Every structure is written in C-alpha cells, then in structure tokens.
Length: 451
Image 1: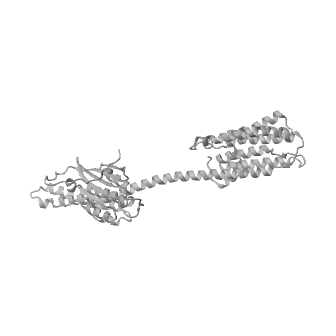
Image 2: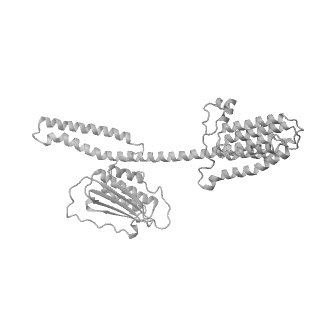
C-alpha cells in the first residue's frame, strides 16, 4: 500500500492525484490469498471467470446488434472489456487501464460509426456492469488517493463523451449513472478495506501490548525480588562490618598492619551498605512501603497455612527435619514466597480445594512441593480473595532462576494443580541423627500427575 502523503497540500494537488494512477499498489497477492479456507482463496478467481464468461457474449451481442458495430470489432472490444477482470484479482489498477481504455475506445468507435440507436450513451449496459465489478477489487486493494483519481478520470471521460453527441442520436445519457455507481462502489469497498486494515493494525498492537505487558511484569518481579534480597545481603554486610570493626578489640596481639586491614574492611563494608541503601531507594516503588518489614522464611510457613485456612483452603504442611534446620536466607525467602504464591493461586482459582505443602532436602537441594486437588463442585474464580506478593508463576520462575534451581508446574489428571521447585544451597552440617523425620503427606492416588 502506498505511503500517505506527509503534507495536506501535496495530497490534494491535481497532478499528485492523477500521478497515483501510474503507481499501483505494491501488493500483488490475490484477494483473500491469506484466508483460512481454500475455497475462499479461490473464490475471487471463480467470480471473475464467471463474470467474464457471462459478460463476453452479452457484450458482443449488444455492440453488434444494438450499436451496429462490426462483429469482429465488437468481439475484440468485448474481450478487452471482460477478460481483464481475471487480472483485477491481483493487479486491479493495470486491469483498470485496460478496461477503461477499451471503454473510451468503444465510445469513440460508436461515435465514429455515425448510426442512430435507441440505446444509451456513452456506456453500453454490459459495460456498466463490468466496470462496476472492476471497482470492487480496485477499492479493496488500492489506497484512497488512487480511488479518487480513478473516480475523477471516470467522471471526466464520461462527461466529455456525453457532451460530444447530440441528444437525439442515442436513446439516453447514462454518464451520471455510471459516475454515481462507480463512486458508490469505490466508497463502500474502500471503507471495508480501511476497516479491515484498522482491525489488522489493532490486532498487531494488541500483540505488541501483550508482549510489553509480559516484559513489564517480568521487570517488576525482578525489582521486587531485588528489594527483598536487599535485607539478606545487608544483614551479611552488617555482620562483616561489625566483625571487622571489633576484631582489634576481640583479638589480642594483632599487628598494626592487620588492625589497619580490619579497619579498612569495616569501612568498605559500611560504604557498601550505604550504596545498597541508595540502590534500594532506586528499586523501591511508590506502593512498596510494606516491604520494609523483616523478610519471612521457612519458619513462617505455619502461619501462612493458617491464613489460607481462614480463606477456605484446607492445607497440610509437612516439613522434613533437614528442611526445618537453618537455611541460607535467600533460599528460605524464595521457598516462602513460592509457597505463598502457590497457595494464593489455589484460593483464587480453586476455592475450597485441599492443598498439600511439602519441604524436603535431597542432594543439596530444597524441594518445595505444593499440590492441590480439584475444587469441590462448580466454583467461580475469586481473583481478589487472596493477594500474593508477586505475579504468580512469573515470580516463581524468577526466584528459582535466581538460585539456579528448577521449577515444574502443571495441571493434574483429576483437575488439580502441582507446583514443584528445587532450590540448590551450599552444604551445611548434617542434621543430628536424633531428629526424627515426619512422614510424608498422604496424598490421594488421584493426585499423581498424568503420564
């Protein structure tokens, strides 16, 4: 499609409008070429062939019988007026040049014949039908400026021919009728084309907006995780600063060089804490005031389960002995947030369903599993009943990716849902043998994922 003119005056100059007749659309694909059904892709060709096959013999008969042209000349003119309709399926403007030029030549030959007839002038009846059919693919393919140029050329040619002939030579003047019909078809077809183009652009914009929305959600979740991890990193830096600052007083006999080194380490740690506070100020959003509270961990999962129980979701929590011990703060925080988002999703999308939460340690990884059964009966999603702290599965994936872990989510065969995360952490001292592991949760057989 041609690019619209940048200036208003340039688009309205007669030379610019007429020049559009020499610049056909660069899109030469047939009409409906991208339709889903094959029969719809072939429909324009079928209609064009049918129109040409019906108008050709009728045009020959009208030109030879009603207007008195030679049979061979009438046949040649009728072929040139009808066969290009097939070309108009993919190249309507070149077809218009052929058909329009033939109509002009036909009018000149009828004028030169000098005979008197009761038929209309300057458009034979079959020519009117064929020309209006040509306007359909032209309006569906060419830009508005080209359509205006075609309509003006049609009007100028028709009115010029009608003025050259006395009123008593032909049975009537149909130039205004052709101008009105062709203009109506061009306006209607152009409106359909522009409407379809607007719908296509709207669909593209929706896809772009959806991608941007997903990207914004991901960035927001990463910023949220970074703000939460600030407390974890700040705690370690504070410990380093305190230990380095008090080392000369706690350790006797330190050389002066070692004391100066500890002092330098303490100063660097304090500077790092200052920069981290500035970084947190950049990451903190306007509505993140509640994030100043201490970050939770595995120890707070019991309270979380009680909270969702009051929301109508009966959840069972099983924490194995090794998982109950001290965990790296980042791992404990990520495990809590994953369970929180998973249970919040159960409250939102499966209200009333039972849920099982399990934490275990295997091969240096914390295994977090949240499984819920199908909701009892027919329930509606309660989007605003429970609020998590992130963006659902997006937040879970980002927390797992931060720790180089894995996340497996998906529906179960019975209508439930399963969330399983594996969070690696550094090796810790073994848990005392006296700790007795609790039994794993008894999940019904129907909770097993589908093969």
